[in-house]
Image (cartoon, rainbow, N blue to C red; front, side):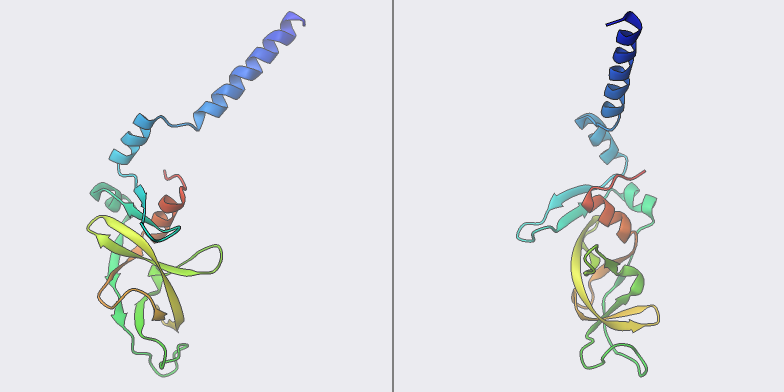
Length: 159
């Protein structure tokens, strides 16, 4: 093999190795990222595919996370919901749809921890989702920051 061809091959291999390693994180950099406000995700025992997402106080500030409480529903006349079946309500901004069309909210399980819970929507009344099933009235649900929690749960890298 000619010297120029060999040098080109070596350069290509070095470039390929650099690109491959650029996406890898060491455990120390992952720990540093967690300390900087990234989420810590753990499995929820007995709930297949559901994870607990824990944030630092700084992480909550970074994504602007806010919550509201689940309320007992009272469907108004002219609502798209069936008043006989709507039992609960949440702000529409709390509702997430997954790739299969299932509807979810993130509930607060601890001061800095959140968990996805499936909901069934009876209809929408203005900016309120009326539910036939979901977390009980009084439960705190995430209204701003839920997509970021889902990204953390699904392993989508942040900034």
